[in-house]
Image (tube, rainbow, N blue to C red; front, side, top):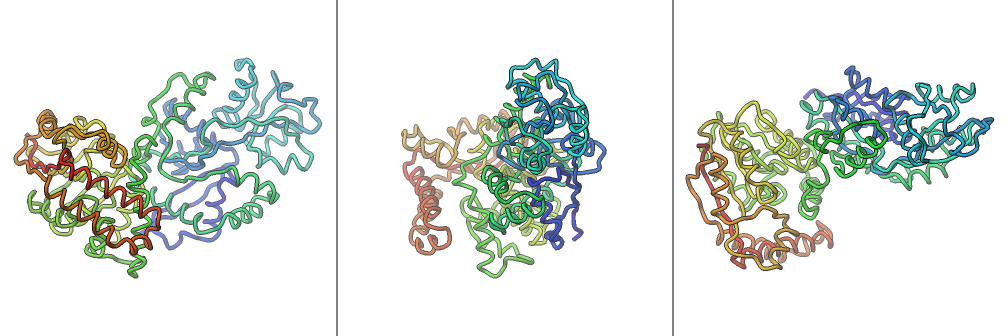
Length: 563
């Protein structure tokens, strides 16, 4: 398979050491995804121009610059958080400058790399913090750090804001003085991609982020710091101080509240004139924090799959579908495992001509079994990007990528040009806050007469306070209603019900046996998962079994077609 290569841009600074390290060591040469690095001394403004020109695919840029550009109509979108911690900007003057405090710089000329760059936007943030009239700010474009040195020396620029540790060697040498600092009130770096990239190469983009995280995790903090000190010519004590306050993410997620905070600050400064919903700033694959389900349910799954495959001697190379279904609950997230997948294929009469929409596809276990046993095509959408990425990886190793594909994000944010002959949803809609909207979306996605297969929770009676807490807190079941209400929602969405099967007793028995089996193999599971995760999983299994045994929570299987 041909290697996918992304053109990635960022500032030539210590924040981007993982990319420099990966490039120097050719760390991704044998991977399915690689990158070409392009350094941008001019910062965020220069990267935005390069994205516009199609010269780079992905940029690691300042949050405020990315947000301002998108709000003003930029076509690019945020695809994840790169560095979670805020950025500390140093406020600098030349050593021979008559200015000795930040207050002295009111009304003076600030150097900026470009308009709409970080140095430009942060000059406004600093002015607001100082209580200055932002309409009287004066700027001179100096393009990059070396341009700032020349302008400060010539006296045409009186103040310059740049990342504190990048400029520290210049301060230590006596060329500049740092008269103050300004800290961004939001995560400092985000990852921004061109529309063509986040629309057409989402799985590969998620894989690249994963590889960077893997590279960082493979080295100790001391190795990180030694490389940073050597590569960027920073003093070890400065690297120690900077490293201690820096948190990398390099993940397809962002806090929507932080995006709102950034926009509010930019609007207050007169840089933007409107505030957009966070989802309009982000690619669909970039999960906003409020969308994430309980970490207890999903965070542990990816590493557990890798560990189990390693233990079986299958950490690399081709896999069969049976290799993966043998992983049990790590591959199949619904009840009854792969047996249910075969039942779905039989019930919907899937064949090579079928196209199935798998809503909430997890790591792709269901999709792979359906494609393998029937020859159908499947598109799965999974809210949790890392599960989606792993699903693509496992499917490629199983040789099914020609029939099975996955996209990450909220399925409600996708509109499909090609309609599906079937959709399935196995224990997913209970997690979706607006089920009527979800069902309308699913209905629109079907061809006329297309069929569906749903399994979900329903209420058989009022829950006790304890049961409600377990359902919403432990299981993240936010949309569980009576069976009658469920059927009414389906009808309102234009979906005709052909069969309804009560699953209460079957699921009560199955979840009880799952809990008991897990407890009976406690020693084995503690060794594999660790004591803390074992107790968390046991608590989850206990909660589900308790809810079904109380008979006020039940299950339902609904089969039908688009009216």
